[in-house]
Image 1 (cartoon, rainbow, N blue to C red):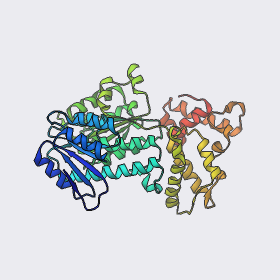
Image 2 (tube, one colour):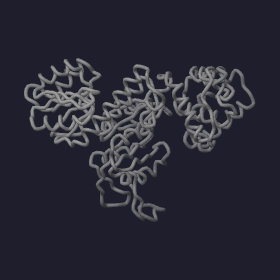
Image 3 (cartoon, rainbow, N blue to C red):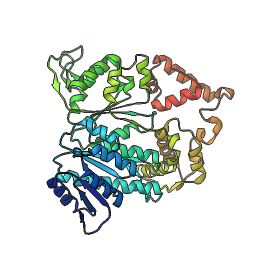
Image 4 (tube, one colour):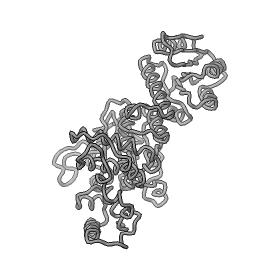
Length: 456
């Protein structure tokens, strides 16, 4: 059976053994610019899929003869570019995530809300159109290549964007891996926005919190709980209630706090420091780290049970050197950003300036590129960024971190090295504290430590 909208732009197949549900879904989707084909059995549905090669398939999970998961597996084997939405009356976060990890584009609870269905279908079709533009090389400007503040035209990054879109409505906890400066915070923010939860997006950088204050920051405290606690304090879990808590650099969290975090995740209850009464919370958790947590587990620095609780879904943000084809696009994006910020008119970068950017190995990843473009835009006097607008260590290869600085010492380099050593010694190896003493970012500190062969 087929129902067609006035202007056909995309094909959709709906499979459901319930005639009433099938009729409702087809009526709901006919308002979109789509050709909607319906089937009451999985076998008939798969025949329609092979015949029409639809952009989208919507299928019930529990049907006689074949489950929705089996339908999904058949479709993925036939054409993995077809998006599949599964529907079930027995929704759980675990089954939703499991279905998405097997290739489903989305997972909806029955009875399906028509408005939500139309919204999801429209989002999937738009995403598929943009993905096809990117992969065919016909994307039109930065708008087509932007996803929730992230910009890319590489397949590697768009695969990540697609997974963000799929898991965002369903996750309870998620773990993001990636090097410093790669954009883990932007991925976390994108997950929160795409989740459509009503609550706040609350951030805690675990590497910036003194160990003795961790519990108070996360769970709050009551007046008189410890010296200096002259009033009640709301913890970040309660502040994020109904929303998302982003725990950046989770690998730097002390072991005692890890144990208490695990209990909160298991029970969805927090106990403020000094209180005898726990409080219920409903919080989604996003954790991020640049560290090897499995290695930390093996060395006893991270709890294995917490790792498995956090890593229901794992996403990896690649280093910039692994998707270097995005450098020209990112550079153009940042030029536009800083032109607005500084009220300047800069049209772009010269070919030789782009060549300099593309040959750099980017130890600080996208954040380093952003800082370099921002500095260049601030100092530039012309309408094009050229080589002289870029930092010396990019232009002269022998000044990169791979060069042996000790072979060609200079008074300035020796003074910088001495200041780094003094700051690290004074902060007892704490890189965050050393960076604060020097008035620079932690990424810049690590870059300079690598350049001079220093360790904390």
